[in-house]
Amino acid sequence: MSTTRRQFLAGAASAVAVSNAGTLVRAQDAPKVEAKPGFRNRIGLASYSLWQFKNDDLRDLKVNLDLAAQFGFAGLEVLERQFEEGQVKDAAYLQGLKRHAAINGLDLYGMATHQTFLSPKPEVRQKNIEMTIGYLELAYQLGIPTMRVQTGTWGTSKNFDDLMAHRGIEPPIEGYNDEDGFKWVIDCFEKCIPTAERNGVTMGLENHWGLGRTPGGVKRIVESIGSPWLRATCDVGNFLEDPYEKLEVIAPLASMVHMKTYYGGGLWYTLKLDYPRIVKMLQRVNYHGYLSLEFEGKEDPRTGVPKSLARIQKAFEEAAAA
Figure 1 (cartoon, rainbow, N blue to C red):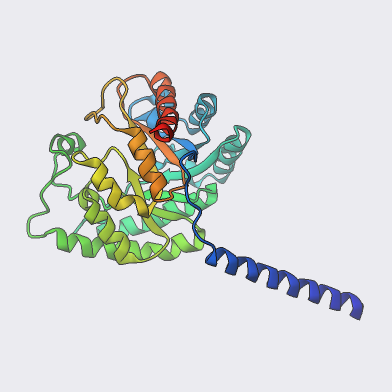
Figure 2: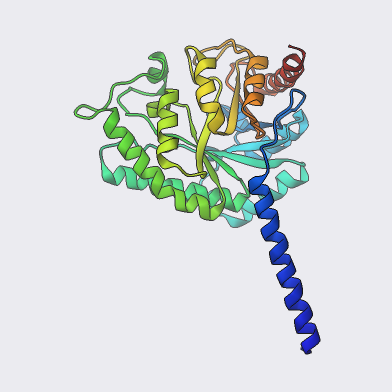
């Protein structure tokens, strides 16, 4: 290579480095973009809305992608438990799923996972750490940037139906208390952070059950970790009493928002939610991410899901007019 050409390439590389550095500085210094009243978040479909753990003909994720596109959603949130045996290790299947999303014009924007760190047994916690790390790597393979995570439950309920019958409240394992649980959960998430950062996947702790049942619990865990790679998945239907006041606490931490609807009556309970109020709240905290529909009604998802999308879309018009 000639000296002139080497000098040219070196100069160009320096210019790119300076340009990139400048871009980073400007991005860091720039004020946050406010979500104006007319702003609309992209609305995606949680695949759980179709399968619901009971509709076998709607378990296939490619079928879910086809329906999401047909209904008019912008993307799909993948429920990890919908993968059939062996699919998570089948590279051809995973790449085919990405392709299927692309040809439908859809994002794969989120993954919903289950884990329980709320156990006094170190071997149980370690197994769930490894499982969560595996989920993070799976999300990376699929190009998914956000992942719903949970604390897990104490496991003292008979089953999930029993837990719901008691409105998500259950006693700790005998001999332990919530303070023990917070230590375990925080320690486990700390061990997952390096994988999340390496793979560029933001975990979102859901206000679900266990230690995530209260806004204070979610906030305590997220703030104790103190990493941008653990935020909150803000579920508008998981606070059964005084939902709006509680949502206000965790909304500023949101990396994803679950929008619940209940056409046909709820599978476990029905909440009459003020969707325009929720939209305005999210705009106040400058949330620009996905609204992910979790349809939890008894109506056939093929009709209940399109109705739900229309309801959420209308909420933006109502919020703007209010």
